[in-house]
Image (cartoon, rainbow, N blue to C red; front, side, top):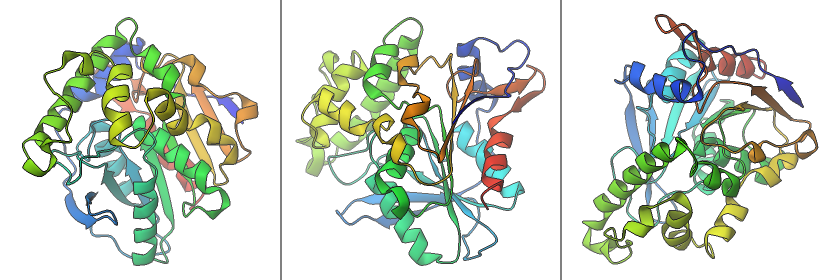
Amino acid sequence: MISESHFSPALGLGNCHAQTVFPTLHRSKPWVATRCEWLATPDGDQLALCTPKPLVDDPHKPLVLVLHGLEGSVNSPYAQGLMDALLKKGYQVAVMHFRGCGGVPNKLPRAYHSGDSEDPRWLAGHLAQRYPRTPLMAVGYSLGGNVLLKWLGEDGQQGLLKAAVAVSAPMDLAACSQRIQSGLSRFYQRHLLQSLKGSLARKAVDPALASAMPDLNNPALFSNFHQFDNQVTAPLHGFNGVADYYSRASSKPLLRHIARPTLILHAKDDPFISTKAIPSEAELSAAVQLELSAQGGHVGFVAGSLWRPRYWLESRIPAFLDQHR
């Protein structure tokens, strides 16, 4: 089902770039304290699971697993805001750091990518064993949203999640790679590629990993996402080039297979995501609700006013999850 969102942008923040940038500027420092537990993965690597409170096995307190966006972490403003909102509503919450995120390099040459559904699937199984009576839900932002939707589509009826929400998800990676190379969106591309370069540089100082790292002095690798994904992401993660990666990692073809109640929140003016990535009604399963707004930017959705901003996602997401507790 596709429906129109009730979101209305804050006075003075109608522009998509203002919506995208404002939350980071307004919420520059973390305010929800967390502790991170390191978990050993089956392939000899490590994942961080970050929580504001110790988790307990309680059937009346669902656990919401949060998947952050590209180069994000538990300290990203959207993750901090959601944790705060969910805790006040009686949920438990945990943020999974994708491999190498949060400022701590992972142990293997590989890192993470936009279709990396195996890690959250493994983590969900681990949490289900540890807290067998606790309902498990998930929220994914941007890259994490695409990962979440892909995971849901792959698992179908066999999935562990009771409900899920994806925000500003790049469901067609090829189309989104083209979109972010145009206009002012190139500034976001440059910023993110520099962050990825820094993450690779931190791994390159490890003698055990240095030989597997790309040539960080090659400017072509960091000229745009298409080049980076073709020469870095794809070979590091077993894809046969960028076209194979974008095809196999995009969640859009799998949306029709999702069997758990799922809400997709998306703004048509998202400066990261091509309108070609927005699925049609026929591409959605009956379990999926796509809620579109004319404005909102990328993981923005700031309502209220400049002086009294209201972060709409922090009410809309809990409201949907409440329906499936």
